[in-house]
Length: 130
Image (cartoon, rainbow, N blue to C red; front, side, top):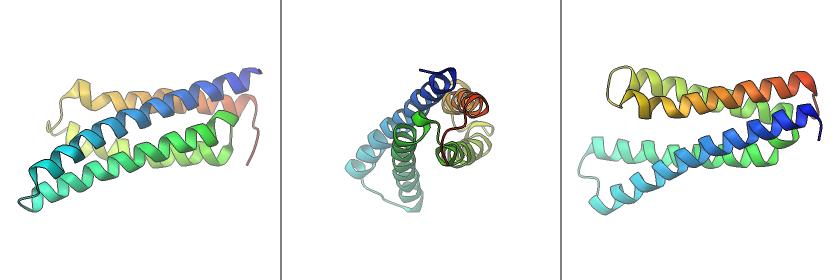
C-alpha cells in the first residue's frame, strides 16, 4: 500500500467515525422523539434535525467506504464540503451560543478536521480518481 492510500484509508476511517457518531446520536434521538411524540413545532423541528443528522451520517459512511478509501477526488469534495458545512453551522448555531456543551459539541468537528487533513494529504501525495 502506498503512502497516499494509507492517508486515504485513515481519512476514510475518520469519516466513518464521524458518520457513526452522527448516526448513533440521530437514531437514539429519533427513537426518543417518536416515543414521546411531537407536541409542538419545536419538538417537530428537533426531530427533523436528528433525522437529518442520521441521514448525513449514513452519507458520510457511504462516501468514505466507496470513495474516500480509494482516494477519489469527488469523494474528497463531497465529505469535505457537505460535512464541513454541517459542522460549521452546528458550531455557530448550537455550540457557540451554549445550547450544546463544548466538549461534546466539538467532537464531530474535530474528527471532521482530522479526516479532512488526512484526505488532503492523500490527494496531494497520490491523486487517484475523479
